[in-house]
Length: 311
Length: 319
Image (cartoon, rainbow over all chains, first blue to last red):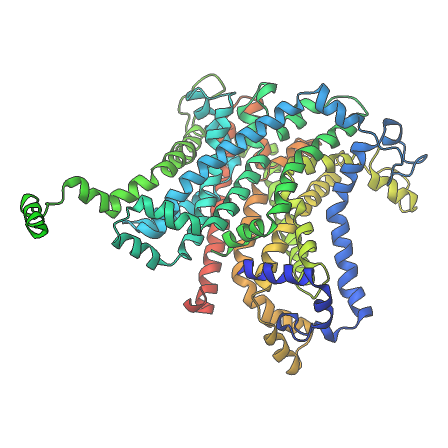
């Protein structure tokens, strides 16, 4: 559903002329043409503008701080605080070449990629089995997986830290690669179950008649048809991994294995009054990969979020 | 000729009795078990087992580097007399209730605004979600800087507008700190609520509004009797998630205040981290985490029954 709506929206943006003239023809526009411009200004554009300003200002401030020279960083009275005419890459340079930031970025990328790959593999199999094999008790397992999604990391990290220690994984990247799937598998299984349900059962019956095994059906028929779902699951898992904080904070102690969020908070914060420049640069660069990924796959992301909620 | 060959082949290979292996290959339960295996291994080893272990730890006096012995309810008894623990419970409830209510109100309002006819709607929708995409820790650092006691741009702007004379001590004062972290949480949560509710709103047919308007419904009545009932199921799910994730929040608090000033912003999650990992007292930390479970169960049950009711209202055909 979201996909078709998204398509409609995209078509509208691509064709603004049509959007302005054909509002009455398009059923989804409803009665908004009854409101004249001054009224719309007050009831729609003004509140929307305020909310957008509040939502986006921290990012603007983050970006601006990361390129301001030190002399303007804290002196709001001499220089206008909301703009700078002498942008500098000093903070970014310092971050990339004088700290371990590139290593942390690499760690985050590695952990996120491995954990996502493991989770998608496990969830594809689990979701297919629950939806299509419908073995005894499949419904119960589906419910249990949904409940597993509701178990938050912040009540698990204490016992998990002892478990991780027992398995000898403490302070290695494997501690994160193997524990993140517990957050990701329930979510992506739930999401993929929704996608698999939409694939016509007849296709599989045909394949079964022709002698295909379940594995062949999954790989050659179901997965190609579920690619949008796989992309959604991938993006969501990757974002969650990148975001994860409490496990990374608890299970990793040496600086060279830390992920970006943890490293920024623990290793980059020092007493320097001008640290804000490199801190903000770190936050900005740490967010960029996700924002870029998101920009390419907005619709998948939104459908993952809303799809999972609607199931 | 060919018939003869065929005949001989058929004669040589009578219809095979299916072997055990063949049966297993088509047996749904057997196959299902294999397909479930990878997910089950992870969820049992790293989710179910730790969950049980956490409850067990809360009944022991385990410390980091030393396995504990069973001490019964001692941890809970100790916590029940600990004013910091009760303060963290109060903070968690305040944080969750205020943030969830405002997130819901602002999120619904934003969803209604975005559902109007707007230029660049797709882009607007994409932009609104950005606070949700950016890693929480990184935006929390941005808020930390925005709430700096000396160089806060908010204080500076208010001062130059003449509204205040002194810098606001955002994170240093007990109640200021609470409102500041609540604000940051709302800031991060609103996009999620807004975009999911927007997806629900888009399924409501405009003709319902037209019919109601012709019957003389006011905008409030249109919202109350059309939008709200049709959105109830999605609201129930979204708010369950929102409440769960706010209740168990850790990152924002840890980055912005670490529970300070004087424990005023300690949530149960941050307190359990402080006691268990920093203080080394795993048993006590586990007891605090375990104490969160009843609250979480209550939230899940409320949403579950909310969902059942809405299904019943809508009938099964709406799936």
